[in-house]
Image 1 (cartoon, helix red, strand yellow):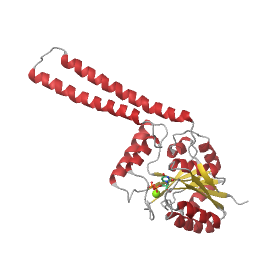
Image 2: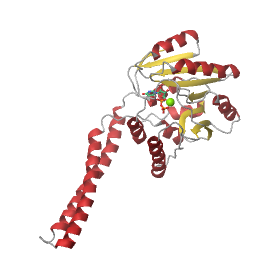
Image 3: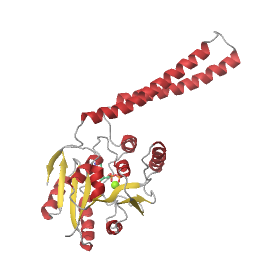
Image 4: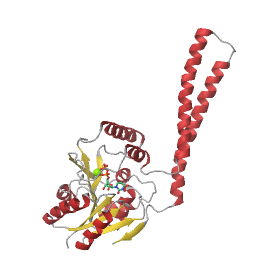
Length: 308
Ligand code: UDP
Ligand code: MG
């Protein structure tokens, strides 16, 4: 029996890219002795992506689609697609051809050797990306790898080919706050990283703003109710900084101008400092509690409006 490869493609406003993507993939499909299954997940696009997908689906029984009832984000799209995938091997790809389909035969060769369970991809450079973005992503990976046991690979993309076993392990993690790069590392197994040069998006625009990415880095998904708690940590940190500055001022002022009221300066320093630290600590607690809050709601990751 021929083995099947499932390809999960999260799409948000990709009406221009989808036809090109499909064409390129079909070229690869012809050269391989595997059955293919496409699962396009439309993340409630505001353009004609859904119509484009309907047309593709009508013309090829290997094409399936899932339409979300609203925009749930790429993580939710990936999860929905992965849950639907029925192949022996599964991969996630962007619709914009930034994940080169030509890597698929290579990935399959590596997996078929039986040594590795997963083939990931990482960019060997960040050409075409602006400096600030590169700087912050590098910073994120440095920080993350310092403070967490789950080591993430800098420049790793979501584009990875995995065996059914790895997929089932990833799907067994049901948390609400999903950060796939971390989840894939967390499940373990042996991953081989293929390097390739960064490819720039040809059609359509990236739907990620700098702030989207920042928020994604912090917690994996946009968190709509942690805002007030965030403010607490912000004010805490702010007070803390002010306290340090004020302390320095008071000390220097005392040294130069002498003491007016004995004990006043040192008391103020201590009060400010402790107050700031406390607010900051409460803010950090708040971050974690907000995560627990979202997890305990047990909301679905996404809502499907239509499926074929
Ligand atoms: N995407 C999605 N939902 C969103 C945003 C993006 O499904 O809310 C999809 C998008 O269509 C694309 C992939 O996620 O296939 C990666 O997005 P993009 O190319 O904009 O990001 P970049 O490659 O710049 O990181
Ligand atoms: Mg892209």
